[in-house]
Image (cartoon, rainbow, N blue to C red; front, top):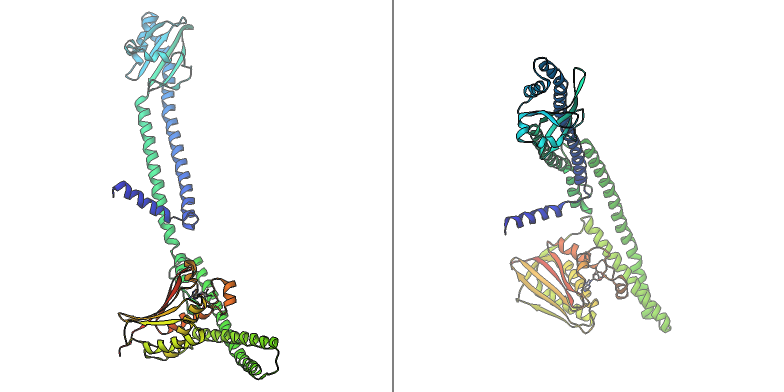
Amino acid sequence: MKLPNRLLKATKTIWSKIDPFSLQVRLTVGIATFSAMGLSGVAIWTSWKMQQILVTSQKQNIEFLANRFPHDVEIYSDMVSIETGIQRAINNLTTDKIILWVRNPNQLIIAQSHQLQVDRSSHLLTSQMEPNPQLYKLRERYWVACGASLQVKGKILGKVYIAKDITSEQIMFLSLIKTLGIASLLSIAIITIIIAIYIQKSLKPLRRISAIAKTISANDLGAARLDLERVPSEVKELAQTFETMLLRLSDAWEMQRQFVSNFSHELRTPLTIVSGYLQSTLRRGKNLTPQQQEALSIAISETDRTIQLLQDLLDLARADNGRMHFNIESIILNDLLSEIVGMAVQYSNRVITMKATADIIAAKADRDRLKQVLLNLIDNAVKYSESDQPVIVKLDQQNEQVKIEICDRGRGIPLAQQSRIFERFYRVDENRAKSIGGTGLGLSIVKTLIEGMSGSVTVRSQPEKGSTFTVTLPLAQI
Ligand code: ADP
């Protein structure tokens, strides 16, 4: 890649990283703008003052010559004729830079500096020249000039014109201004960079608070510590307030967990009894009308669904409190999976096939919890696909891991929602899901249980094509 292209790409990357609404950018831009305004003001004022000093001193010089000239002529004219006296006075005052000429009242030149006989361009100034010295620009040259009336011994002889070439001083002054401008721009750039670095450093503690806050999960709310050393007192105060808020949140979270756990526990027992009574009433009630039977069936299924929901909540509350114990052992998965598939075929009345890559594949897991996980995933595969579509359970072994895949050809899950389905109570299509049943807690329990067994669960899915849930567990050597 060529250098300008690379530079352009690097600039684009830096630019895309800049957030115009961030405190850092706002403070930098604000302070840099004020510094730029201050520096530019100083530079402009300095230039104006320097120009004033330069031009004023030259004007005073010309004014002095204009006042002196009639006296010189008067002195010379005592010795020679008045015309010769004027010429001598001109010769006396003429230098490399100062030129003079005198016009009589008829505008005829009666005497002039010798340079003017060669270069007559300065005469062009005549019409503009005023009695008080002024700065003029003529053909890229700068002049301070004046045209004052020439009166000797009470007689008006015409007008004396005095012009001083200050081009070299002016050029020097302009280059000085240029240097001052460049120095100001450089200072502004350096100040901006220093301010940006300083602000970035000052905001570091805030970024640390934000980074720490991102890593805090519901389970370590109470244990989270910000530990910020040598930070400004305002940030320290913020960190302390934040820690106090986390502690309060932790207490509230703990109370909520306790409540859910107690509530689920207390409700589950009476509901189980209610379900039992309803079932026996339905079984024994010989003279029930079909409507009464249907009503009892609905009551049973709703009670069972509520019991399941309470059981799920209890499981999650136990996991949150760290009270969920796993009885980890080596399990031959080929056998366990055949048993689970057999059970699932019975209750779902679906074609569920199992494919294993080896005769014996064993994993380290809790038998009952793993059963619960796989039944849950197979149940979902059955629920979210058409009844004529098969469900496939695959068993594979990779390096130190065991992989169990539950594949269906159902409705699938949109990509944006795939990361959310493991959240509690999250359901992709709430309205459709309601008609299917379920609580929205199944997958979050699956994830909690699998992670409790040092495994992981992931999903690959395509809408209207199907989903594959993959459970990975540590391999066991037999
Ligand atoms: P639910 O009780 O609603 O099944 P889950 O936690 O088991 O709750 O699943 C959460 C959501 O994920 C479901 O509501 C469903 O939308 C989606 N889902 C889970 N498994 C599948 C699957 N195999 N195919 C399509 N969608 C699924």
